[in-house]
Length: 208
Image 1 (cartoon, rainbow, N blue to C red):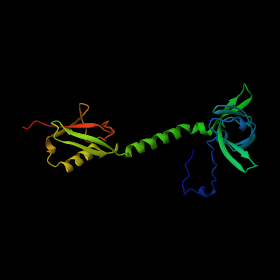
Image 2 (cartoon, rainbow, N blue to C red; image 1 turned 120 degrees about the horizontal axis):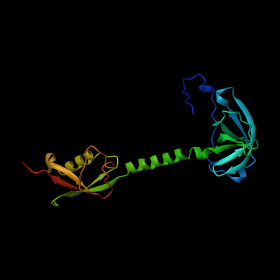
Image 3 (cartoon, helix red, strand yellow; image 1 turned 135 degrees about the horizontal axis):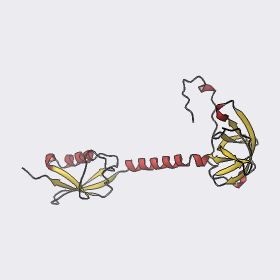
Image 4 (spheres, one colour; image 1 turned 45 degrees about the vertical axis):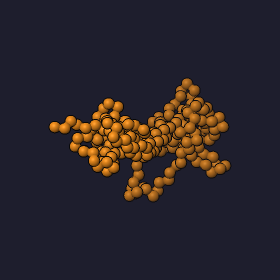
């Protein structure tokens, strides 16, 4: 991958090739389709060559495009002139001298981990913004108050909500317990491992 900034001289001359994640695990229907590659073997002068997909094995495929040494990683491009379709479907992997063929990896497999990571990050982001309630309970049972929060909220923010609703509580003498451990006010709800429906005990330091 390369980064091209808008103020680079070649920026306006760049044309992007679309990649097709549908070629994730390969399909029998794609055998014998025409493909070509753009190679920069060992960083030398570019070269193009064409061929066909010969065999498909799950997320890898064999092709008979002629490649020069040092062309690993070059794009394998599907060219279907009947429907004016040009798509990057994989990258050249290596030469298989036993089969007298070259092998490649479908582009969907390459981006699979990125897709899963993005999905996980999206799910985690949604989880961080999901609103739920926790229950503050005074050890003597006098206060039993639910506070709404999010995983991304810092505990001191929940503490402030509690004080706003119950100003009679003496801040300087209070500490909070969850699952038998003192809560870190500077950690988020998630970092403190607090979850929906959790009961947080309010306790007091002994008066001097």
